Length: 64
Image (cartoon, rainbow, N blue to C red):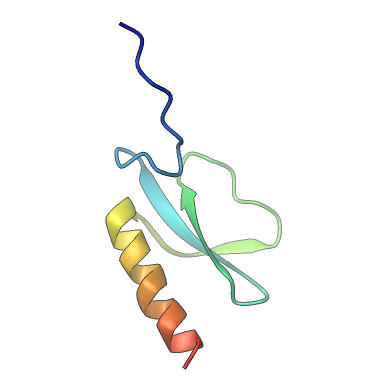
């Protein structure tokens, strides 16, 4: 049986990074993928859930 395609951005089995750009935007990024130009790592590699928590906490602090 062929497995169903899993978007790597949603795949809990991967390790993730949290990236930011010069505008302070955050992005959840699979560790295995190359980091896009203009972005830098600020957290990770870590489990997806922990990266999401990091983004949620840091996004709140930027918007208050």
